[in-house]
Image (cartoon, rainbow, N blue to C red; front, side, top):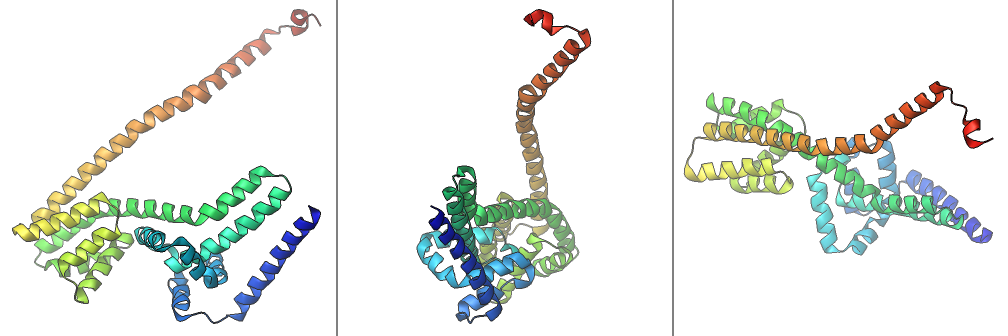
Length: 295
């Protein structure tokens, strides 16, 4: 057992020094992997950049193990997350390789020491840490877009009613906003500049965002274009519907929060308060427990 533990520790130390040597050597990577390493490099932190550089050479092997269907599914997840920190499918595979190796080696070391809890935690870290980051980014991005969209539509309606064309108004309003929704509008406009039809560009916008409000926006625009409805009226009505939906969602969240708060109070606060009151009464009464217990 001690020999196996020493062997694992030696492999871990060798891996650390090998990784540092690879990082400093700036080894040549294939063109596609080198490009993936550079995409969004200015938007990622030092730790993620180091992890990407260490794991990029193993990214193709991870992608092969994942298979085409899972790669396509994770590519869509990364798109829904808005490529946080310049994340691409290759960078995701690199991080999964590094975190998986760290979690696996650390889990084996603690398993040999008999620490089952740390073993499970490290195995879970290696398997799910990258997914946790993507899942969190998807939720945050969706919330930001849905908060921004109603105000964006109001401003867009005002600009269109002032006489600008719809496409020019989109460009003007998007330039005044920051965040994921403004980025999505700029991507859509760029696709239209490259020759994509407006209908297809907005369909791609809907595909990139798993949001009911974005789907409502795209559907309303396409239906208004088909029926010839005034775009200003469509935008104003859509903004009102979105705010009404937000209010309903807020009421539903509040309604779900009440039972949770009640359960927390009845489970923890009420028993703790009763114990505190009982202890105060007993201590304040000056009761001699020795006479009761016969000691």
